[in-house]
Image 1 (spheres, rainbow, N blue to C red):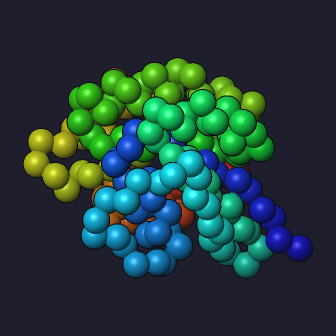
Image 2: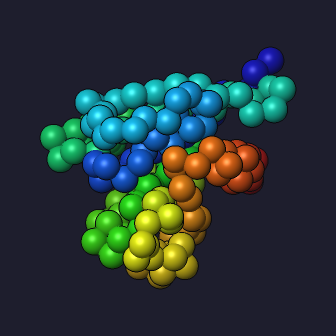
Length: 156
């Protein structure tokens, strides 16, 4: 019997949420920015009996009112930032609002670590106050590390 867990990904527009989902699913990484309209989702298999239902929540202002409803039943919330100071400060607001949301766990992914001037994961963590991991969502080698992080979060 499959064990299904919901993982929701939120953050500002353009920080790499959809790219992250495509990388995890093994899909083609998009080259151009296409904003998520409302919600996107997909499933990934981790191990023989674990399925993660990934929910990509649209980050534009007009969709954020839906986040509380869409986050119901979420085991882990991933807040994605683009590793800039402005992005980390906004992500801190999301962390403060959702860090204890209905018993879900929350982690921060500091994406775009490959860009010049990117804040380190430790610098982002000092701003957001939440456990932060570095990532380059366009790099498929990040996939296994992220799988391990999700497995650890979902099993603890």
